[in-house]
Length: 120
Image (cartoon, rainbow, N blue to C red):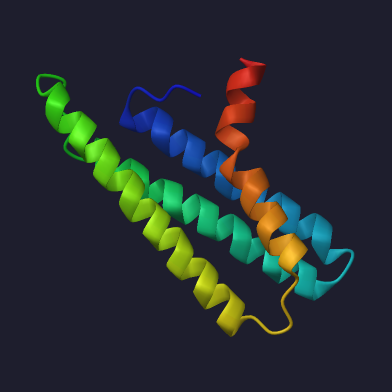
């Protein structure tokens, strides 16, 4: 999904949050530890993308494309660090943890904007 403004970025994050809740609700029918592991994975993906969107689009000025490129690189590096820290926290704090649900929900939610762009 090509995001060109703040409104589109926040719609993508909102769609990710909705997907997180849906995946968690479906997994709650299987087992609660799968549900909260999936919730954690989806919230990590959604939170990281919200952080990225805020960093990139909060002070966006089209007149300065070189600053935008630097901001994109900085935001992506910070997002990767944030995801690593949040995964480490999830592994340490969630007991019992369903690794498949955590990483599966993360991947599904993280890749959701790409899936949305295929449908458009």
